[in-house]
Amino acid sequence: MNFRTPTATQIAAIKAVLFALCLIPLALYIQRGLDDALGANPIETITRASGEWTLRFLLITLAVTPLRRFSGLNWLLRLRRMLGLFTFFYACLHATTYFWLDQFFDLHGIAKDILKRPFITVGFSALVLLVPLAVTSSNAMIRRLGGRRWQSLHRSVYAIGVLAVIHYWWLVKADILKPAIYAVLLAVLLGMRGWWRELERRRQLAAAAPPSPPRGKVIPLVVKAPRQT
Image (tube, rainbow, N blue to C red; front, side, top):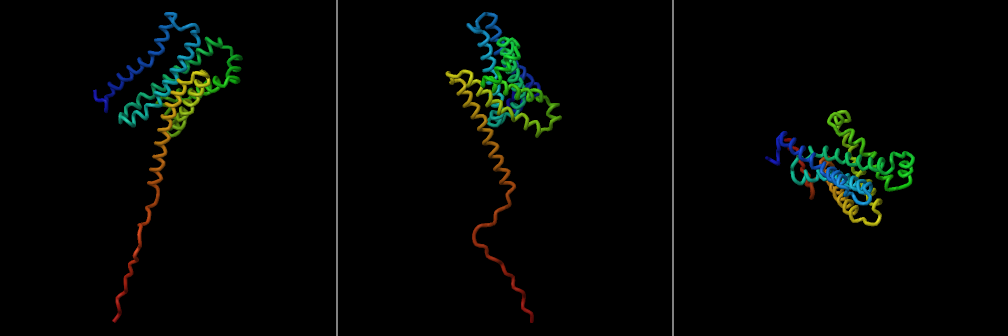
């Protein structure tokens, strides 16, 4: 297999393997549930695990572009959509666990939590922002929105990443090692994008700037008219 330019069949095989790998966390926790190995508080275990895997998939999705730039493997971008949708999938599992197993769809209790508990407020905000990204992930929606509008919409993933890290940080309160690691990773991924955009801005300004005048002393050339006889 040529990793630089894989064929369409090879890309399809890579996607199939990636799809199976992305389901492994879910399969492991289902197996733990069947084995009654989710600990003393299974609901909390499932809620935290699904939330953490949501954040992991979000960071993996954001890492695709830097990995493509550093490796030169442009076909990696064709995996980004699947990773983004799995981010949304695990976010929905995380939210469903809270809405169903924790709150039993008590809408009043859910609304009260969202309004009064800051970590749930930011987490719910991140989920709401994820919905339009998932809905507009298809090629048909890209064509309908237009490339520029679609890119502007999907840049909200950066805000989603920040909200997700804050949600996790405020949730754990004391043991902040894991959220701190995720915060650093997110800062690096967003920092690289900011630096690349700044370099592109400078390049465009340099290309649009008028040519600078020559340095040094300018000696005028005077052409004398011939004498008339």
